[in-house]
Image: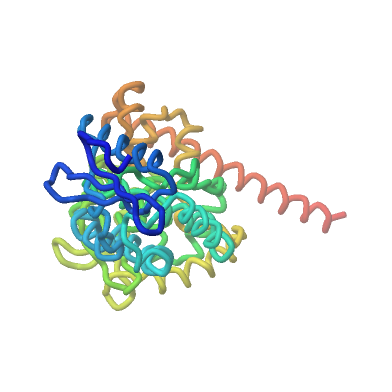
Amino acid sequence: MTGKKRRFGRIRKLPSGRYQARYLGPDGIDRPAPDTFATSTDADDWLAEQQTEVRRGEWMDPDAGAVNFEAYALTWVDERGLSATTEELYRRLMRLHLLPTFGAWDLDEITAPGIRTWRAERLKVTGKTTVAKSYRLLKAIMQTATDDELIRRNPCRIKGAGTETAAEGLVARVPQVDAVADAMGNRWKLMVYLAAYGPARPEEQAAMRRPDVDLSEVGVWVRQAEPELTTGRRVLGDTKSEAGKRFMALPAFLRPYLKAHLALYAEQKPDGLLFVGERGKPFRRSTFGRKWRKARAVAGLPDNFRFYDLRHTGHTLSTRSGATLKDTMVRAGQSSEKAAMIYQHSDQERQKVVAAGLDKMIQTERAKQKDTSHDRASGTERARDG
């Protein structure tokens, strides 16, 4: 074989008895095989594979993947144009879950078996949700490396590894929403109602200002979001999606709450924040969280009922009051192209109808609660008379 004239590549027998193969790549660089071969036939087969890739235009520089994963991943995050909260999440996932394993590796050293081993080890020490988020991030980075032709194929190929199984949302009853709102105190009561009956996200409420409140239409405009990072810094920015910019038509019973809040608790300047703490500063997640946990206990809500779960309560009650899926999506500030094509448009007038239905349902539930309390009180009186 060594004396055979070849059209593509060269094979030579080494003093060890093994065979070496090499060829001239499309880039003009002489490319040796990464390993030697036991037989000349094996070497010839390898050269045939390289020739096929060159002919099909599928050839890749075998040294292209010699790029440090950590450097590539950090640049990947910098170039995404991410929101502050998403960037914070990605950097935390990399720091805690990806870089300890892959940080010193080159891109072409990260293999499917290596990723399976990494995932299995992570599942032993942290939650499934965190591992799923970390896997999705790794897969996205490696897909970009594939698109950049640094590696031939994305090694993240574990079916379902990036899927999170969300816990079923908890739903509070109307009396429980009233109870937790009362327990939070007058300054924060409106936040509870906006979360449940808007429904508004916490970061959306943090960005609300006096001009966003419409007393005549009984509603609030959501124009921006101001999430709080783990450092305690708030970052003013866009809503979660374009659909997040919306007018939240509210149940009519909230009109006096809106009016009283503007007069007593909102920042007292034309463009003042709607929600501020006792000292006039933007509310903080840690302080609000302590108040929420105490109020939750007073209202008899379970320990795993989060403030965010009030949104799920709002979705559920809106649906029960006659809202369509599209109505619910608009109220929640959620977007879906598929749903938008299937379901009818839900405009502001339609949102008023949904809010009216929600108001009627809330008032009915409150009346039932009063009747139940009255019956209990009457029973107690009859027992005394007897």
